[in-house]
Length: 79
Image (cartoon, rainbow, N blue to C red; front, side, top):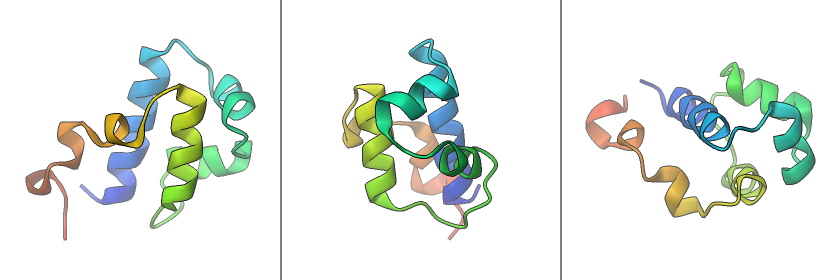
């Protein structure tokens, strides 16, 4: 799995866990709806850490909580 795919899947998991909509995430994080959509659809080859941090703030979690997932294990990611 590519890193951008792992970020997309993790973000989807967290939005579901928080019972949020993508629109609510946009409102709480301040990240543009188009940016969120591009992340979810893996349009970007990579995502800036600053954007992930803003999304985490909208979700009410830390960066370490975001990356605390088997999705980010080295064995699951392509080089």
